[in-house]
Length: 115
Length: 112
Image 1 (spheres, helix red, strand yellow):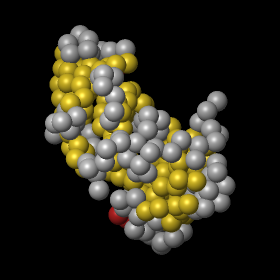
Image 2 (tube, one colour):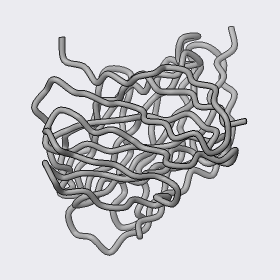
Image 3 (cartoon, rainbow over the protein chains, first blue to last red):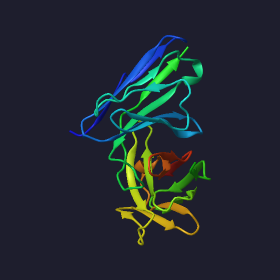
Image 4 (cartoon, rainbow over the protein chains, first blue to last red):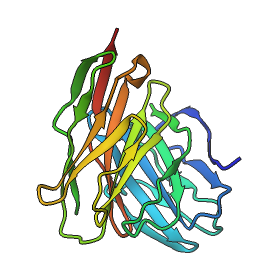
């Protein structure tokens, strides 16, 4: 089954404790991206990757890191989480957008609470 | 940067009626795509419909249609014959060369 898998689904942690949210897709997609969803703000793109070893900042990259060492994996790293990073996070994958017609395949989301 | 505007934070509609959710965008790109996604209370993102900037005909998918007016830079979603299961958050999404921009969403509530 084609899917994007995020782990963990829920996490409560404390300020400053490094954490990683994993994202894996089995569709051989070149493009992967991370979003955060906050009430009233919709989804905002954090980072995206057009292919292996190619990553770029989205609209809200501050406080986050990513890596793309393999095509299928695109982890999101919070080196020193802060309470303003409490949010619902989505990973997504697709063929390269290029204004094209490929919809994003979304993971089920990860709800992070930073105390 | 691209900009997507959904001016309706919330909409109410009665079952079986049609409803239009508004979306306008701002871009200087020539080639782009517009998507609509549905997010029910369970949280997953569900793809509904797509319109390409070069498509001459409005997209349709079952009860969903996209009223695309390129000159006005609008891409409104029309849901015909609303159902109770249509109650959800709806997002309009602009797809450029390498990035995607989401609108803030419209919460649709369908009443019996």
